[in-house]
Length: 503
Image: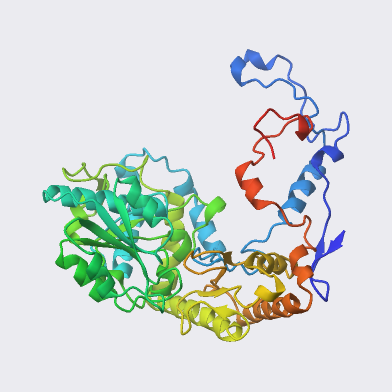
């Protein structure tokens, strides 16, 4: 067993061997009697698995303890501060989880006739209305299954809008500080991407957009606050420049957690945006998903929204027919419903004042970290930030310390590392986003760890080069793991894997 922490014991981490080492012949995890007839008597032959050579034979407690101990090797938002920037690893309230598991929601078949699903449809209707109010948009579709699909949805609507006007355009302007998926979403629709560089303080000037803007431009895709964590001060002037030449403005809503209840993208000149429910409204993120990326639009784009759309007739709701100008259906059924229930519960619990307070606390937390670290770590762009601050490894060159070394050393202190090497416009970036859900005590512990690591970097740089040293495994070859992952189990040594497979 190994102790986790630095200086003082922070917890006990149990060693865990591969489950194969726990295997003993004849040991089982159940006491079910063997079937009296062959499995093929009641199952299709192609579904019946042949016995697997060397498959582990273990008891139920061994299985339970094995996977529970492995889970304790991971850092998560449920176990520690999780400061990933631009991803908003916000704590997911248990109340939302309970509500999403109510039998009336979980057992409701998606093909249930509208008349028998009025409660669920009412929830969707109200969520659309709330998201429209929060964003300053006129209409919302809950159908997109992820933030990136929300971007793609908007780009498809933009294309349909310009095509209807007999003005098929080809170019999308995207600032270098925009969210990373924006160029991919534009390219998927067949558009050419033209980048716009920020000014010396990391912002987009209206004059820079004016120089790039002409009648070939479909839209400007801009993230506000941007991925450097700064509010785009000229956003309204930028929107005016784009609209004056017939273009549209897409505002990426990935960082809406800095604005909700305080400012509305629809009031800034945005024609469309996506909501990342996992980032802003406490639905599970990543592997805990699936995601949800509703898209909101101004009235000029409402006819192009995905179908079907909810229609209210008196006190009854139903799914309407596909409008003639709709871009059609994006996916099966209507969004990831359980995610929408969680977001609905969060918004209803918070209310307008609560959402505004959450935004204020997120900004305050980020600036508290910035203020305490900016004398020790290089701040990419000086001044007040919004929901996240971006530092860098500049100043540690003499010690040979890179951002990756700092991030790995944080694991020894019991903290998941911030986002590193993003945004790309900042060399050696360390992007920290605390969210509103962390206490001052937690922020202080993280800051103290970062300050301690800075001292170690200058006094004992080799310690950072070796980090992490207190985790169950040391520093991994992440590039190789990403390029050649082992995605299936083999009952034979890795050295005998088929060519091209394995690590």
